[in-house]
Length: 285
Length: 264
Image (tube, chains in turn red, blue):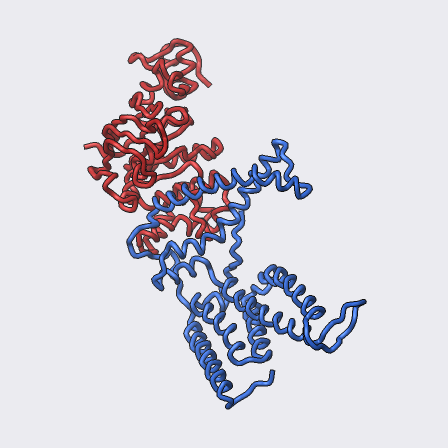
């Protein structure tokens, strides 16, 4: 059984005229990294919030279909119950700081304190998360004194320490510089290697192409397609859905270079390997 | 962005006392002089507060509080000295204004009283870590939500102030006049305040979800990363404070029945 099962999910925000999610169905396996892409207003953030039951439990509105995590229907569960299983990281790191803690170390401990985790265990988990996200050097700094990138990694650490099986991230790198984004993706890759299921909304297509196992393409609340990055970014109708393919894919499309299965490469490595194998000369820089 | 919390960890005598004991100190510092009467107890407790703050190396942190309240109190002294009604004894004269001894004495009483309260609160606020305060409130059965509101204000207010300043800069960069005459400022107010309010609503909603997904409403019994353990001095200090309060109440009763008196 898939870890996350979404069946005919429909949702409309209170006072909105159109559906934010319109008959979305999908399955996400344990340990999978699923990238969610689409233009603004496609329903990506709403989808992430539906995974944690915030839609409709927090936002209310009209809701149909079902979302289950390990067989547990999110609509029938409280956020308090679900957040032990599903962690959510938001786009804006500033709004994730609780404002009640004086240091980064204490800030990361917030969720653990709420769940009654013993202090010794808290410290073990916090130290491991800070190490993973390379923020141990900021542990005594005030949370609001951090830069956007550092603050986002602190927010991610605050979720990781709660050891959820699923980590849902809504544009976690939107306010980060390239190095900060890469750091977050590497950390997420480690989490995936540890068996965590990752669902990430992201506009940085190159990163999604490189790290995701599968990509969900949403448009106007509908699930257009869910497939491997190569299959998604090889689609001819991407532009119609407001998505631009990775640069390597665009180059290969222009050159008419595709692999034996008819799909275009999406990463530098794939492109290099394909062009090298095809004898088209030279390396791609 | 800095927290407006004035707390600073100095590992001092005051830091070692529990928040409840420091709160009891505030109560005693205010109640004892009121019960006993006269300026001597007031002065003595104020000096004790100053000595405690100095001993904990946080006296300088009280400067901004004293500066702000000092300015307000100065106006009280001026008004009372020159304009207090009733019969008066002339101290000195500045043109048509007569400085009155009765008004001056009265204002000094107010100043002493206010400074005593301020220094007592400084003992509590400057030496109590907000999270220790929250821990103490939760242990006493107060809702963590209330504790959170109390503690988070110290950091969220400066964040909102900085956010407002960003919006002001953004509006100014688009040619809006935000400084100048009163009329200009009033005209600038609306275009500034609406994005500030709207973004505050959005931020608050997102922050409340962020708290929710970190188990803020969990029904588990909360634990704390740093369990606050009061120093060995906490209990004797608390007993001494309670004894002083009892003494004050006893003196008050005896004074009411006319057994003792205190020179005012």
